[in-house]
Length: 496
Image 1: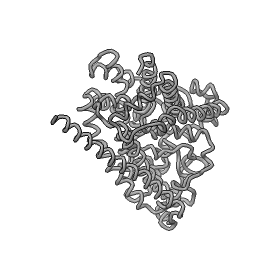
Image 2: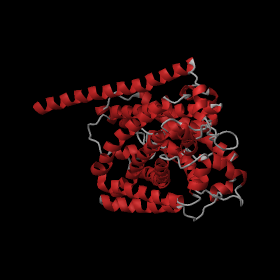
Image 3: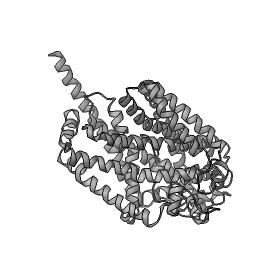
Image 4: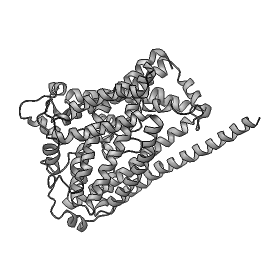
């Protein structure tokens, strides 16, 4: 819009580069766990296996001790992604999405059906659709929610801008945006139903609340879920579907993040696709392998993810809205551009939301979140540990808290993704003491303790389904109808 605002674009490019560096590690872990699912390699104690045997996590400090079990899959992930990026938008990204997205939908649909058939599934759904309204008073919850939806919808770090540059000038961007938003939320709702149904199985089997077996992020994906897989009927199938879905979703997301950086380099330097891919991908892969294939990888990932997600994405989104609305003052022109071919039309309400409501809300959330981080350093780590990732020899209480509350990295989802699986603010996995409950007879106890959903939870679930999936249907219908009108108008102009 203005050449002087170019720095905003490069800020978002930098965020994408950092995200790509650590995001590949989570995909590598999920790839290994897809294989582990066949024979439940994690055994009776998934938490000890994940931290001690698989990641070999040591003290909270940066080390150069390589973990071969992480290095090899991480290297393979980067090789696969760089090949996709080198092939280009149509042969690489487009072809991959055509295959991966339908496979992801089918695999996760099968996972949800399998989870809903588990004894105790109703208890999990009851927990999912029974909101804790008091949590709305927490700034950290709002910050995490903003960060989650911004990441999930690829807002604030250039992905939507990059992909928009590939569409035609007559594209209905407003309608397409509504379809993307409702599709994302619809898939997240489906994901939440599947995952919480599985958590309900484990919670009921152990006679505890769902919150006591639910972890956030990595704790849920790589500790709580393996424990469920070990006892669930057809557990191997459940595990392959779950972790396989994570791999597919992660690769499509990593591809979209890297495309922002590669496109920026190509446009700025007038470089070819292969040259730009190597210029961006090789350094990113090397940094990723150096930092996240070591025994300190989980600790580095935890801190970097928190601050990039909590501040990097939200701050650049806030600054972008303020500059466009109040410095450049071209929000009306942007709305008029959207209205040329877009339906429904954006007007005063959209301008007020973009220029006032959203910036004010983000400012308040960021101020309170920063206050919380300054008053109690992230993860219970002392300030110097956040800066240097070091604590006293032996780790101590801070290391223990980090160990049982790793970052919610896997909530990053590509379009249609797994974001709802990893909600903010959940307790650590397992009962007090940090170890998973005994596996003996979990399935039998879950079957004996079968419960039904409460009426209020059923009502909330129905409302959510109607709003999200009904909205998706209306958005698609509007997009198709408007597209048909545009096509007829184009034919009439051609005939004249």
